[in-house]
Length: 112
Ligand code: 5GP
Ligand code: ZN
Image (cartoon, rainbow, N blue to C red; front, side, top):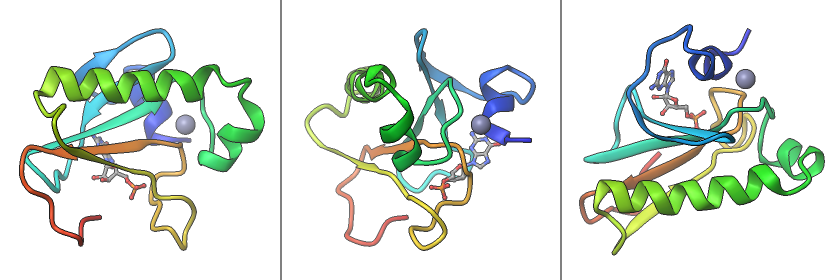
């Protein structure tokens, strides 16, 4: 059972900002900045290392494109932050790889 797989499949509702054949981008349930969007590959990878080892590059490329697309849609292209927490020591709480896109304010150093 994986929360983000359920969100990808529509079993758990989410607010989508962007989607394509490879990824979805949804608003974080507990936003840490005025804009806080999660870019999530539709395919389950446990974390960024799993994705690096088990993707032929298509998902990684789609994630980068989606981040740029989200920044454009949200009007934060001039400045934002992308965060990936990997593993327990990295503070990852949902074990389906995802990328936080944060912006809409001048971000301090301590976030996430
Ligand atoms: P992590 O700590 O793994 O890097 O980030 C997980 C993020 O997922 C957290 O920021 C948390 O607020 C968000 N999150 C957890 N469950 C849900 C959910 O059901 N829906 C949405 N939209 N975000 C969630
Ligand atoms: Zn999953």
